[in-house]
Image (cartoon, rainbow, N blue to C red; front, side):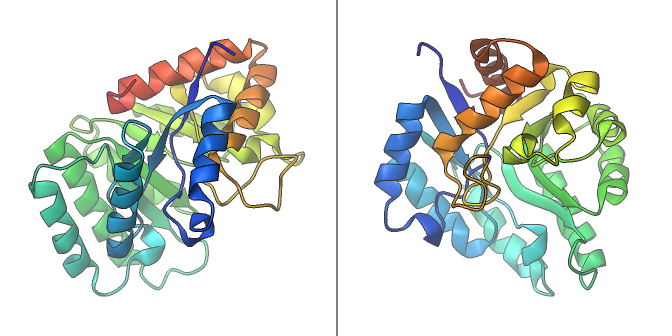
Length: 261
């Protein structure tokens, strides 16, 4: 296999990989993965993400951000501590994983909005792309991003599982792409039809979100970066192009958004 591809969203710093991270990394590389991008979700994970990235230089790349599900009353203090890490010379390739999540509760709805907006401002200030998580909050997210549309450096709408109309709504943000993962392979998923209908391949990047959302035939198992190849294969089938075409195009999209090749 001459081509390689990139997993743009994987939580390889998590406890789920503590016992066998080296083997997981080796399997990813053997499958054709050339790079993995690892988002922080809270203050503690900034350090674990950095540790994995330092252990696998040139392969693992860190992001920094406060995940919406981790936003609590103390979010301002948490962001103040995080921003200290950005103010020094830093290795972070994106602000993420950030966004809005009203799936389980709206208890911190206002705090999530304010926290997300602050991190959008980081993205603009430091010219770092955004890695955006959004569940049950697309209208709120879109309205917020519209305020900054001319200044945004771009980013990824991570784990896109919406319909064609929702995809078109997100594609209005020129510098952004959709992160497509294992849900594409689920029998119940409409993405196999909706994506080719409205989303050009130059607006897609590959991801696993491992250890979550493992693709078929591993659904229900721990996800890992090697499985991103199954997403690539399904995209190729859905778009009616070769696997190499998907790999080359999604790699080019990563370079455009993140400046990494």
